[in-house]
Amino acid sequence: MTILVIAEHEKGAVAPATLNTVAAAAKIGGDIHVLVAGQNVGGVAEAAAKIAGVAKVLVADNAAYAHQLPENVAPLVAELGKGYSHVLAPATSNGKNILPRVAALLDVDQISEIISVESADTFKRPIYAGNAIATVQSNAAVKVITVRSTGFDAVAAEGGSAAVEAVAAAHDAGKSAFVGEELAKSDRPELTAAKIVVSGGRGMQNGENFKHLYALADKLGAAVGASRAAVDAGFVPNDMQVGQTGKIVAPQLYIAVGISGAIQHLAGMKDSKVIVAINKDEEAPIFQVADYGLVADLFEAIPELEKLV
Ligand SMILES: Cc1cc2nc3c(=O)[nH]c(=O)nc-3n(C[C@H](O)[C@H](O)[C@H](O)COP(=O)(O)OP(=O)(O)OC[C@H]3O[C@@H](n4cnc5c(N)ncnc54)[C@H](O)[C@@H]3O)c2cc1C
Image (cartoon, rainbow, N blue to C red; front, side, top):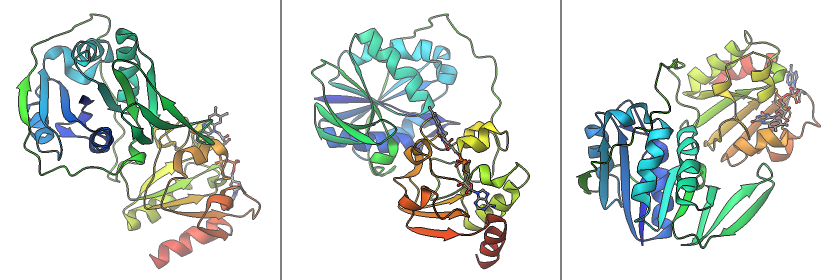
């Protein structure tokens, strides 16, 4: 049994979600190979070779894979994937863009967002916004799987010494071209990697009031998230959304401020280690999942909390 993990990388570095995906591969068992597809990714391949438990790194370094356009990367992964028992990618925007195409090209079902490995062919994954956990068994020749990173503790980024092998195949489907990107710039930690997340909801009333959360987050070294209601109201950009249709986070500490606790929001944060909720409505459902709850007006509680940090 040999497993191919598609490395998530950006700006010349292996993204943390890759380490969680390798952890899932290790639970399946067998040799683990990592594919690094991109352009000028020699440094990423070297870093991937050091990941604990990785036996081999395949590097597809070609202009066709610059920006990892899924139309080009998917045929590469499908071609390589035929020789593997499992193909795994993190359930990030990138992984979710590439892997369904791979599954289609290999004519197999995709197993999405697994949170645990029961055996080499049986996995658990949340359904109904995390309200039920399905156990899924697959008899596909190649099991194509996205991995929810919060379900697996990351393996060590250092300690391995895998062989690095170049892959010559260059697939340029000619269907899409990279035009440009506008990246949100923030000095705060990335939402899905942060140890502490402070999130605001509709109770914040407007985008200006998020300054209270930014001030608190900066003192705590935290990332700032938001509910979909806050995003839809235009308070903050949608890359801050936590939940079923946003980002899935599981930090050590999640502070939900002015968020009611709808199931779609809980789907994105309820695996957090400690949940603190601040809400003026004591009946708010968020208190059912909170370890610590403060029934208070957030405009009084947040500045007070900030002074105490
Ligand atoms: C298909 C689908 C997908 C969805 N995906 C997501 C998702 O990914 N993420 C997500 O978050 N939602 C998602 N939603 C929306 C979700 O159902 C809720 O509508 C949303 O989470 C509500 O956001 P909220 O808690 O900020 O707002 P509300 O439900 O309006 O809650 C605001 C809370 O703020 C409190 N409050 C108000 N003023 C104060 C104050 N001064 N001090 C303290 N507390 C105060 C109120 O008591 C209230 O509890 C989705 C919905 C659907 C149908």
